[in-house]
Amino acid sequence: GAGVSQSPSNKVTEKGKDVELRCDPISGHTALYWYRQSLGQGLEFLIYFQGNSAPDKSGLPSDRFSAERTGGSVSTLTIQRTQQEDSAVYLCASSSNAGQGTEAFFGQGTRLTVV
Amino acid sequence: GENVEQHPSTLSVQEGDSAVIKCTYSDSASNYFPWYKQELGKGPQLIIDIRSNVGEKKDQRIAVTLNKTAKHFSLHITETQPEDSAVYFCAASRGNAGKSTFGDGTTLTVKP
Image 1 (tube, rainbow over the protein chains, first blue to last red):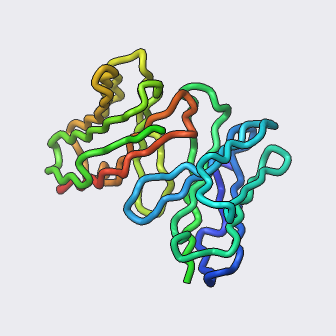
Image 2: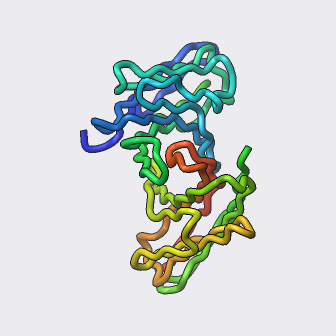
């Protein structure tokens, strides 16, 4: 595709349910990142994948959050037992590599609302 | 870890005026400083970036300056236009563009 694609664009879920958010990076991009953006705030780094290396999970806020990247392409962010404070826009980005100054391209995000 | 502070949180200017947004960072090992523009309902888009071996970079109406000693960097937009209205984010990283620490954003409004 032309850019980073995320689905769904909006998701409303009940507290306690699990949700899965999907990210399709730009074809050929080896690096993929997940961020969380709460209302009126900056982006909070969650997790980063680079090729076949072990992911950098240093930003995950709790063990309810996990992510995987299958075949070095599509990634899924899973939030288990959702809480109201998980409500935010979840943004995915990809870059051709993780080298210095390589531009990261962002998707439009998934707006998650936990009711 | 890195901490990035961004000011002001909101900025309103008249069309044609200049706008300046300032950021400070805490990690002296940070060496890459991108700026993003985010329009409503969209993801952030890179507009300009600067590396630590450069003090200033310009791209048409947009310029960024970096003072490594003071650990601060700024975005300058000249001859502002209504389409410049958006939220602007600064960020800092240790060379990995995608793993950055972001400021809280500046909402820029350009009045026609």
